[in-house]
Length: 153
Image (tube, rainbow, N blue to C red; front, side, top):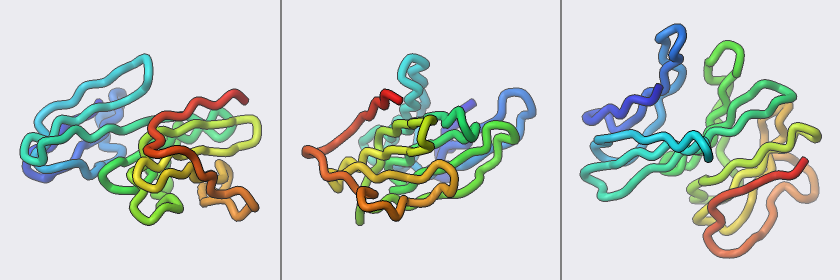
């Protein structure tokens, strides 16, 4: 479940089975509504007093059962353990002010790809260590304003 918290400017993600709060994600000013697109796994939050919409993306690494959420306004990626529904870590992508939007997971090589809207790059995260990879290609330059990613493993 996703609950917009008007006065605290964030969204609470709640486990529908246990009722426990999994993570609280900062969004814009005075979030007033939440909508979910089950086909794209995108969560949309209307921010009343910032006159914008926060978009969050959840993607699952089937090899590690980790869920990756792009936090557009917070410039981070949250990693959630799929078994316990607890936050494992929060990752700061490579770009200076990235506004992460899309996440693609390649469970065959445990690579997580993050489109960075403001940095015009894709950051590669190691799905085992949950860190930006130290490989030669850990940042991939792409066109202007990358938004969505699809991975063909």
